[in-house]
Amino acid sequence: MSEQPVKPSDMAAIPNQLLGDIRQMIEETRTAVAATVNAGLTMLYWRIGGRINQEVLKGKRGDYGKQILANLSRELTHEYGGSFAEKNIRRMVQFAEVFPDERIVVSLIRELSWTHFIALIPLGDPLQREFYSEMCRVERWSVRTLRRKIASRLYERTALSRKPAELAKLELRALRENDRMAPDLVFRDPYLLDFLGLKGVYQEKDLEAAILRELEAFIMELGVGFTFVARQKRITVDHDDFYLDLLFFHRDLRRLVAVELKLDKFRPDHKGQMELYLRWLDRHERKPGEDSPLGIILCAGKNAERIELLELGQSGIHVAEYLTVLPPKDVLKRKLHEAIGPD
Image (tube, rainbow, N blue to C red):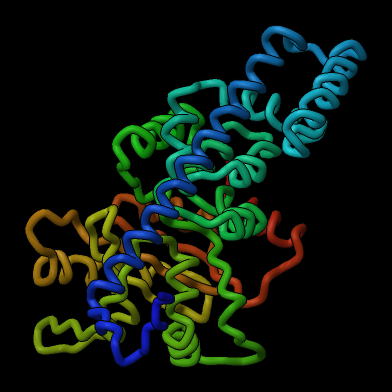
């Protein structure tokens, strides 16, 4: 006797919570399995690259080494597919060369895919490569975001890139070992605000309004960890009211960050205004467990020597230029050189 088909009316209703929970379990397991496979493959590529470099090439790039790679690629591609094409094997060798410490690789592959490493391998400066890899790990950048950060010269726009190499290494080590973020890893100069769509003549209120319209993109340019708190924050001192343009909180720094927008070049009186805001915030808004507030003055231009003489860093103030139009690479390089200031 054949079974009768089940009628829809005979089926027990599936509780929405049960279905939703099982779907979540499936998706979480899929994600975990994919992450495990990615980490395993990336580690495999690192080991292959290291073995080839140490036992075959021995740090040399002669014709003999090239022929070995070509033959090795032909055999492996035949057995295991296109992942072991000669170009990819060369990348594996480079991977092991520029990331020689296995412990660092192990810590990075929890968040970075092989495609992330492909974007990092060509970077020539070891500090630059370490900066991008650690920031990518901490802020969980996608490959697309990583490539965009590299293209926009994020490293060169941080204060870290202007520090002596040994001090920069110490800050990166603190980030790698303790996830401790320093202000020099967070603040940039210049900030690229081309996404605001501002053209021609505009006022400070237009700049502020555009930032609030594109708040998500603005926070992405500031960096992961910033949370918006307030606009036009009222600060009352001796019955006089002052208004801070934008107020943020940075989770990793555990500090309030005040942002003032200026259409003109930086002037010394901007320092006094920001110091007043920071001291008021420190007295009235800072909570237990937080560090002293920091300030960012975004302006259309600045004089590096004047800023150096004012010793703004001691007051927790960072002055940076903003660009509302993405400049050509040569112009951006010049801006970066100007930001470094006189030797």
